Image (tube, rainbow, N blue to C red; front, top):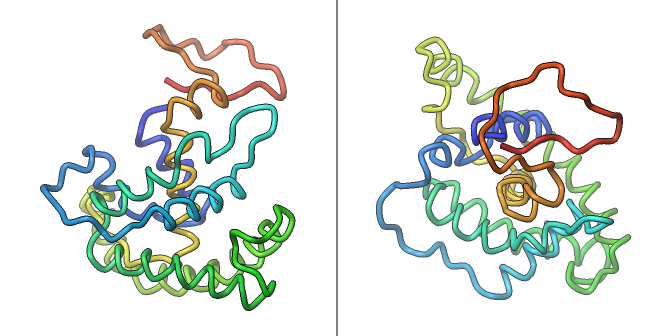
Length: 206
């Protein structure tokens, strides 16, 4: 699965444009940037959020793919300043919201509590993102008409949407995600549209 296809998949799963996706396609080579301000505590929290989104089962989860560190790199190198600010503020906002809902920090919650909290947070995120999408629609359509959809830079989405997008992006572009969750084809080969597939098989990663 190449980067463009991965971004399309994540956009479908999260209901909107992948924040920073247009820069990710070019390898995030946007010049030197100052660190967005991540701490080791932030990264540990993001790892646990990612692990709640993609938990370890018979295959490794998001934490094994070090998605917290991936988020740090993506937010620092691929996000605009406005997007960075929204994401960094979202880290503390999420923990505050969790404490209000459960009387415990996210890190102190058990897995079932974390899951229930993120399910409720996703409902809030969808409403927020719907309003952002409507606001961005004219500009998004303008870039699409010019056949340059990946040049469009979205307004910041809900902080949880950004975290979920980066969890999926970090996991499925990692060695762990590609080799242990997706079926990985390490050498080029011809396309075979009739290649056998059984229900329950993993998707292919290129």
